[in-house]
Image (cartoon, rainbow over all chains, first blue to last red; front, top):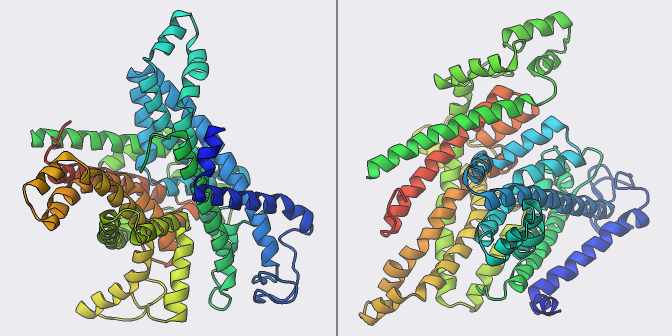
Length: 274
Length: 324
């Protein structure tokens, strides 16, 4: 209760939440309202927004941009949320192991994490996705594989500081197994910073997905905001709305998510002030 | 002390380079299909005997450990192998592209640091003012904008609508400018991609500078400096800003690999002939030796960059002792 009040007391967080809910509604409603799908050709190509029946104009193939934008929200949200969940899972597993056991295990895992920080992550992502063949699954797996180190570092730090606290010692004296201590004793206490980091990761995962799709490395059977922008590269000279509208959609979505992330961060750590 | 530290860091860099070579070699070999399929596809001729010849020519018929050993030995000699697609030395290809990327990165970092520190210190002077809020809002916006899209918008506005600047390439095609005229031509071409790349970093630098300066301004030594009667200008510049720059230097070090990766998109949008476009071409044409070469070269560059930031650290903050 207290948490919710703190969260919604920030106008930015409230605004972000409202916009996010609206986007989720659009994503859920898209297949009900536009049953013919985003690839359906509705008229002449490159009609400007406001042309009869075309709220957002048509693209270079004469497809309704508004339908594409609505369906794009589905891809962005799906990839953003699932890839973040996967990354958080990997990050918790490796970060908790490194932080809880320390020593050599910690050293080895951290060196492994460093590899991911030294290699240009976007190039690594392109390689992973190209090898797995561009698809929804490969996009999600690829993004999760390049973004878990952020979570792992936060989790490791929390575990390092929590593992020698009295309640952990007590659990050990009671004869609890390591896995049980990690998941039932320490992890719940480490959750606030994990939630804060991961809420910011959803936005950056959406940006990354759009970049992949823009380069033609997204799922070829799905229309996403990134692939709409990629497809508009030749049309932008004559039809500004073809790249502008999907780009604005990405920006508004990511902005809303970042506002929510900031709000969560403040609500979860009331002592922390900028 | 310093020399010993630098030597230790160099050893670590070499170890990291070895780890990168090993991990990326096996990572890339996990891919289904090999170079022979790619090359056969290119020549439109996928005869079994031809594929067998190709595999023999590139040593792909040997067991993986043997292939790795052969590769490791050539890399140790400073040779990154031969591109499958261009039949050229990988080192030659990378060295041809690298200066263009470094030029773009240097321009972007300079613009980002200068603009970000300026905006950040303006915002920190009066926290909560309209100017401060403007800086915060702007940086939130740049965090949320897809970089490639920002680049396209730059092209749309400055190259298509206003026609002030060239939309792509590093110099005017077919021109044979020399000397200063050529420098001017490249300078015109770098503005749009360079600014696009800079804006994201500028936003984070502004935010970091602002937070750090507000934090530092509250510390005792700043009060002491004021109490000693040092002018406000001097306090801001010599006491606050200098100390506030420290997290900025750390951040710049962390960004090194993002910079190389981020430039894939910006270089792609502006057809900038750098490492980023090369990486993209190598991914789409399955040119594994080039990809491996890029991984190794960029990893080394990142390590080198981190070494430089460590040394810059010790200059920015006299309390830091190298080796700690």
